[in-house]
Length: 325
Image (cartoon, rainbow, N blue to C red; front, side, top):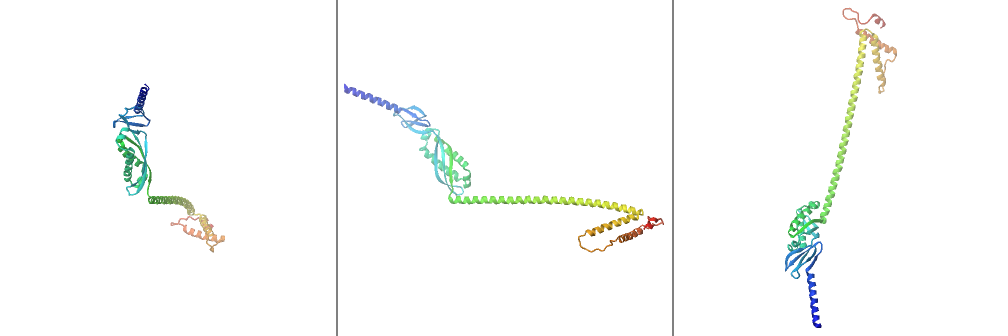
């Protein structure tokens, strides 16, 4: 009896253990950010999302455990020959996310390796179609073209390429030195151009200033000439009026007007001689009697000019004027 009980007990224990094992095999927990594929007798049947799930033990099994989180892959450094035959070292990173776990598990073998090789191939293709200058200055455009090409290629795998970034573009050392010399020469060229522009601008401003000064000086001379001419005109008018008055006085027979006019010119001439800077010796009749004698001679000439006219009429000189002369 004891042996029978012992055998039954062992059987019960074995059944319980088997049941526990079956339950353990049939219950699956999927963590957040992952999806599991279920295969029944080697064929895909369904996908388990995060949470608690049950499967049929021995008939079903977990096929692939796929991460649905965004993943980053380092693109190893490789040599790229540009359009102008420059050899550069290029590396980068790619960010991708699995959208369909079943397709990512069964449409491609070794998903990460496939994405990595696809990215490296397209890096050589895209960057090889550009010149070195474009390669160094158009990194955003290169990233956008790579992302478009890789995303289209990975779409059948249930993968979304979210971002591709080129990290480093390293030209050879001799090319770097040549670029440095070119940059230095370009900067020196710009500095020379700026200096020349400054000198040119300064010359233009100086010429403009001289032009304005010349114009102002010419306007000043014109204004001064106008003023001088106006003064000479007024002096001439005054002289003409004085001459007219003297002529009228002479015509009326006044010898004193002639004496006044001649004495005035004589004194003005004497003042001009005295103001002359030349050092000369002048012999002139400076005595009053000599001046009066000269005036008397001129008066005689004036009397000759005003003799009685034709017809016997009396001239402009009166008898009293003749006595006074």
